[in-house]
Image 1 (tube, rainbow, N blue to C red):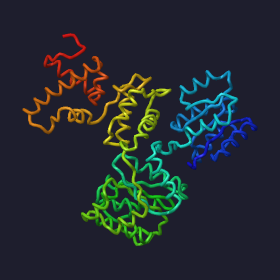
Image 2 (image 1 turned 45 degrees about the vertical axis):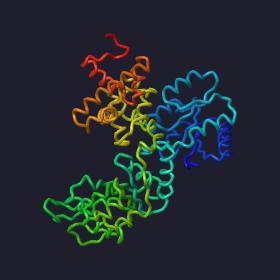
Image 3 (image 1 turned 180 degrees about the vertical axis):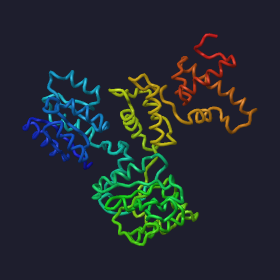
Image 4 (image 1 turned 180 degrees about the horizontal axis):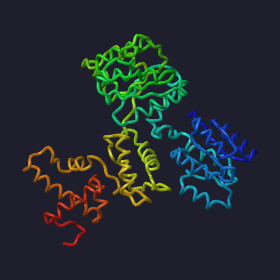
Length: 446
């Protein structure tokens, strides 16, 4: 069971106790407060899986609480409880972002069924979304290792959210009140990385006009994340190994040894065993870092996260209130895409869609995928790998496929694009090419 609690927000003492008793008897972790302001304070400091809130409360009512949560924790499920005569208001609240509502009075089973629909979902925490079963396993594993002080190596493709998992480990650990310092080893020039990590004294090198603490010092009593550590130079790897072994650091140009109380996390997008075998990464440092390995699957494998992540980014980047909704065709397109750029690509796609949409809804045509043309072109024509003569023959066959698909779908371009497994935008591009060559298109006047 997820350790995150169900938060009950109800100003009636008797009803609040009854709700808590019902949930606790079912083995559900429960927190209870009397108004929206108290609920916000709990959510700021403790993990919450779902909020069950009354509508009519003072000083902050359920609707005001909902508005605040949609701004601060947009993926946290909120269930509103309302009297029979206020059902219209509850429906309006759902349009504004509530997950569902309960009409008083309701049976215990109704409450339990409602809560169990959302209890398995882990809410956003520093960008963390975990609704796919594979991601939930990774999050559960990270929470278990967070309690220990072991070094963790997080492996995954670029853009999968490795730093988000690292932050979650820190937030769930006894070091949560200490600093979390992240440094991208691939983004800093090789000749500067040592000074950034270890710090330096005044005059240690040209331009060192004053002493500066390094990232290890800055992370004292907290956590340091060595992001993309596989990009680190072999010489610097040896110095990192010594820091991990001795738990102390010495600034460049300095003579004082500084004891460290720092937890180390590392991430990589490479196969580290292959890097070690190729002598690009020190074997002793690999085993020092790989005490507890965590592998984060790519987005195309954890498809249950795609729509929740998309909705998070819509809320995050939308300038409209309420934020535009993702239509079913848009959700279908997002779910079908292969996401070679993972979560980072999804974030970019949503930002572009918000520019193109009408402000109320994001439809499939608003989604501009990266490398979409090359992918779809390869599916049908293979034009990038065949010579021109063979390509011309394939173009004819490609046009035949499109014509047949249009006939089977009775001229529906949407139906044809689904049959061909290409996007509507790519189909429109193909049809324009066919018109240029005076090819008769089913459903269009000659």
